[in-house]
Amino acid sequence: MAELHSHDTPGGSPLGQLWRRIDKAWAASALILVVLALTDLPQLGPTLGFAARALANTAPIIAVAVLAIGYLKASGAETTIARAFEGNEVRMIVMAALLGGLSPFCSCEVIPFIAALLAVGTPLSAVMAFWLASPLMDPAMFVVTSGALGLPFALGKTLAAVGVGLLGGFVAMLAKGSPVFADPLREKPQVGGCCGVNQPFSGRPLWRFWNDPARRATFRDAVLENAVFLLKWLVLAYLIESLMLTYVPADWIAGVLGGDGLMPIVLGALVGAPAYLNGYAAVQLVDGLLQQGMAPGAAMSFVVAGGVTCIPAAVAVWALVKPRVFAAYVGLAMIGALLAGLAWSLAAPLIA
Image 1: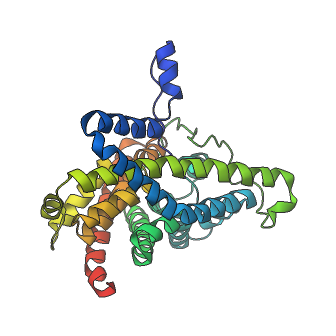
Image 2: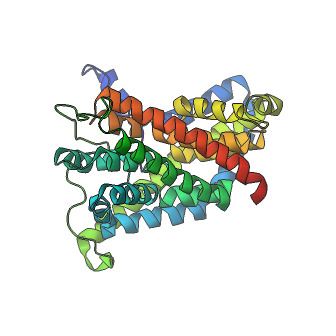
Image 3: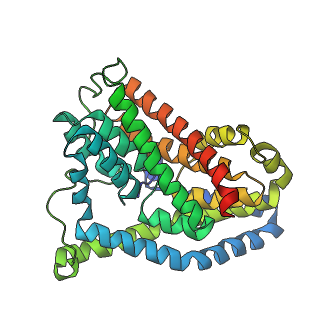
């Protein structure tokens, strides 16, 4: 799972060191409650109650999600990703998009792996397919999304993830001789990652990991880490959703992001790209926006555009490639988001 990490505050002052140690998600939740207590104390209780009930309702979903991630981490399932980058270029693009849309690993975790692939001449097209698809969906995200927005939306987003990956991969393949995609790597790419992994995807998977003490420890650590990760972002999301439902007029949301046609989808993508901080928090925000009148197509374009361009995913790409390739990455993400929104706007009435 990709987590938003703030850049270190310059200097070594005690205040700067304290700022680096503060978890920004928990701090944001605390700030919301403090401001609410100071400005509208009667609403504090209902907001806390809303968040507590929502967390209780999603507790089984969270449990399934973190156990799935723990198993995949402990078994070493990420080693299978390397197989996507073997064979001819078309096969690589297809496999990279499929595995990118299904893999349970954060964008920054694959930076060293992608850097090594690019350095030995793996086509940028396959890497682009993986990069575009991987931030959008993983097993835990699928469980959380289906629980909050329904199984059809989760399946639609999964198809969108694979589709955006295929779009980017084939565009990069067809345009590989253009100035945009020529010589894509930075001279000294940064291969550090927010997940602290320097040599991922080594070794072989061990599906019955529980017989290995080291892998049991990996399972325990992954479950605990991801449980805390999901908890802090969902608490923040539920607090924001409660305030949004209380203070943001439904007719305003419906007027801006509701209705038929292309404009709500475009606005959903444009709003999603800069506003999206974390995919798990975004699921609950979209749920609230849909209750307020957001169009289904706008919801899909919001989560696709925001997922690909969110800070952890974007930094992973920026760290390795030149600005013109990064610009192509963002442009392809926006085009893919618009196409996904249009497709979902047509499909949603048939599914409902």
